[in-house]
Image (cartoon, rainbow, N blue to C red; front, top):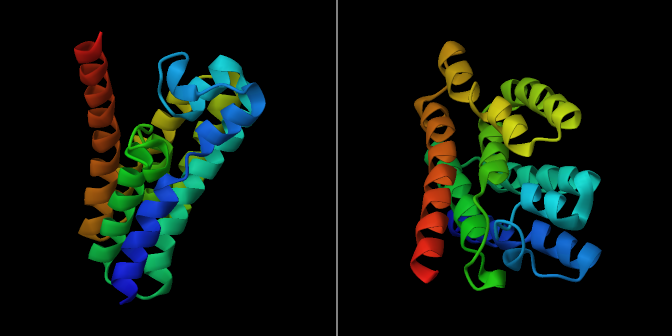
Length: 189
């Protein structure tokens, strides 16, 4: 029973459209209809929510992923369930119930999920990526500096194969969602 509850909670957590809600509150507009149309922190920050709220959105999206996997961890579930929770929180972010299945790319949410597998390694890369974002105001660069080293740190420190696989798979899934969005956008133009 905790397995089913974990997976349902993971999807529902991912479905909470933080960037859309913050952007709507700050501007009165639908984030899906401005900028690149992505329901993510970078688009929200660029289109009017501001960099402070962009940072709040990134941290909150990371928190969604971290919480989803941590629920599986707290219940003492096997690592495969952690992976499933991490995958479903990303699926919820990408195809959220609350936005008619039209969501973001889940890069930050996937990072948070990876952080539950590798807490201290994530902490170190998060500081580097966060400082980079604060200096450059380029969200994608900050996320890259958090995500890219994680699978290699997992390997270097002998983490379980599930952690390594998730840390490689999460950014690939976010990239594939980007391709999916571009393909869908091209088909509707």
